[in-house]
Each structure stands twice: as structure tokens, then as C-alpha cells.
Image 1: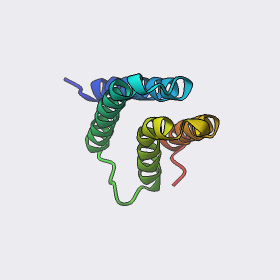
Image 2 (image 1 turned 90 degrees about the vertical axis):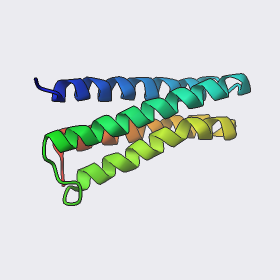
Image 3 (image 1 turned 180 degrees about the vertical axis):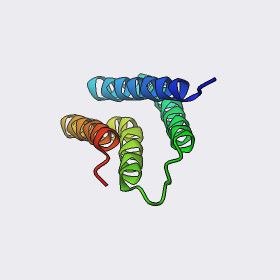
Length: 116
């Protein structure tokens, strides 16, 4: 039984949940939504990290010699942190949403083109 498609689906669903709740935090940074949003984005970020490393392991991609993996890790860390920053600095929502879009686009470019 092939496990890779399950990890791919889990990775993409986690990305969708993480992105959606991050942009929801940008749209409505009300304090009463903070706890739930932080829990959901934290779980989604963890699932994304675990499924990403599982796919690297299944495809036998070495972590240390591939630069695109490190760039994706930085993008993941940035995207995971942005929902918390949105609640602490609500006046920076437009800048943070632009950063989030750049991080997601960079992660997509890294995985599909693997430039280094």
C-alpha cells in the first residue's frame, strides 16, 4: 500500500487550514477568537511539518543537501507565526497578509521547481 498520497493530501489540507485561519486572523483579530485560532493553526502547522518530513523520508530526499527544503521550512515557520502576530499587532494586517502571500508563493515555487 502506497503511503505517499495520504501524506500529500494531509500536507495540502493542513496548508489550506493554516492559510485560511491565518487570513481569518488578519480579517478579524478579535480577542475572543484568538484562543481557537491559535489552537487550530498550531495543530495544522504541526500536521504540515510531520507530513512534510514523512514525504521527504518516503522519497529519500536528503535534508542537508537540498536548499529548497530549508527555504520551505523558513516559509512554514513564518506562516505558522503570522496568526499570532496578527493578534498582537492588528495595525500591521495589510503588511502581514502580503508577507503570508509571499511565503505561500515561495513555498510553492520551491516544491515545484526545486531551484537548488
